Amino acid sequence: MLNKLLRYELKVTARTLLPVGGGVLAFTVVTGLVNAVLNSQSNLPDMVTFLQALLLFADGLALLLVVAACVFVNVQRFYKLLGEQGYLMLSLPVPAWQHIAAKLLCACLWTIGCVFYLGVCGSILSGSVPTSLVSTDNLDWPVAAAMLMLVLLLLALLVEAYLEFYLACAIGGQFGQQRLLASIVSYFVLGFLEQILLVFLLIVVAFGSIQVNAGSWLEAFARVSPEATMVWMFLLVLLCIVLVDAIKWAIIQWLMTRRLNLV
Image (cartoon, rainbow, N blue to C red; front, side, top):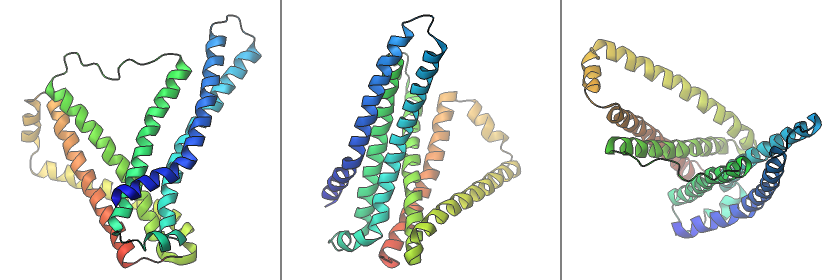
């Protein structure tokens, strides 16, 4: 059933995102052609140079619009699940976690695709095609492991960002007719509380390191390669983010199963 939900989410979101992305891509192609023609000329009038810069600025805003549309459409899909659409979707013999997973996977897939989309548009504007993002020459296992951990860390941060939106929507859904305003306020309140908690944890870690004499740990890290040290640091941060993601997921699922207030 999860596959059916995911296909449905991709189909519905594609109706909005594909036309927007296609239109901006066409505009980017035109901008790239104009940019290539003008860059091949010399001694252009100041007005033409200004118009060229204005066109590039407009294309940059259009690309930001694509990113904003990607985030907005995917967050809106979860927000609607807590409203009138929830009467239909939640009546299906599907557990709440599958609804959350389908919308989260759909959002992450579109966002990852948006990253590659921006890369293609950037190549069109610059007039160059990147042959490889990463050089594989002399790529030993610590460097490869560090790169893998970095990719996993970015994916975990992406999941955390969407779960932050979903949690705010789930909390706002407890306020009935004012759920939109409550969702917006909840999002900023959650961000503020997380910043306070992060500062508190950093203070605790710093104080604990002083108390237990962290010099031995630093000496141990100094004996290994910088790449291996980076792998362990990425792994530690990744585990922390995964823990935060799990907590947010559990709260969202609890609110949807125990405290659901459809409007």
